[in-house]
Amino acid sequence: MATDGEEVGNQVQVRDDDMLDSAFLALADPVRRRIIARLSRGPATVNELAEPFAITKQAVSKHIQVLEQAQLVTRTRDAQRRPVHLNPARLEALTAWIDQYRLVREEQFRSLDAVLQSNAAARGTQAKDSSS
Amino acid sequence: MATDGEEVGNQVQVRDDDMLDSAFLALADPVRRRIIARLSRGPATVNELAEPFAITKQAVSKHIQVLEQAQLVTRTRDAQRRPVHLNPARLEALTAWIDQYRLVREEQFRSLDAVLQSNAAARGTQAKDSSS
DNA sequence: TCATTGATCAACCTTCTGGTTGTTTAAGAC
DNA sequence: GTCTTAAACAACCAGAAGGTTGATCAATGA
Image (cartoon, rainbow over all chains, first blue to last red; front, top):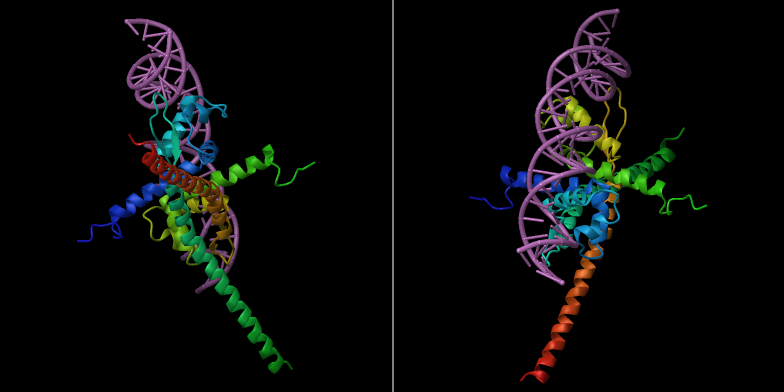
């Protein structure tokens, strides 16, 4: 029972980890981030993507493989060309992961501020009562 | 002139790249992501953070160094303890980077959908006119 | 058929990363 | 003082990442 996605079992957790590992690792390189930036303006071939860089096309091809393995991009076929497309859904999964912790923490900061302010207010009234 | 932050010059670009490199690389590890998750519930010491893991405290200490170098966490001092705190601002910088490309691309998808739909509608009326 | 073009595969090298063990520093506690 | 505890530092090792060069595959066009 409960072999589905919501289960917090090991299998699913590992798959999630692998996804996040490969996606964040893929973004941890300036060349790959510039490729992402270029693809946000539309699909492009390996040659087109390699043009701005001072490295070989083979190296760029490897970078694209890293992005593809992370499912951040997909490759189609158009005759002998292989256009690369951005996959925004994967990017959204990353922001979702980050935000779940960022927002929790920011909410706590806001709560802490509220507590400090109400304490300060309480001390203020108390000070008036108990001073000298 | 124009030696400020907005300039798209080399210096600033490099600093940006370094920041994103170290931050995304820091998140590309399941141990470090679990540390982030733990810290979203409040500060913790190295010993507390190391407890759930089957690796040595030295290894966890190294992971925290990676997170600190990426400015995703900060360390304070409390007697002989060194509590680690999450830095939500850095997380926000990452979502900002991702979203600038994700949203552009998603907007293009929506525009493409609109074009396809209007084309389909145009073909529909044309088909009535030109059929046979 | 054969040459060209776009892109991948394969082997190799160097550097970085994640882990270990062992030692050292720093702050309290006795 | 000495003992204990929290944590960092240092040296080392195996494996992965990013880059290169050279060879190969696949699709097109003459």
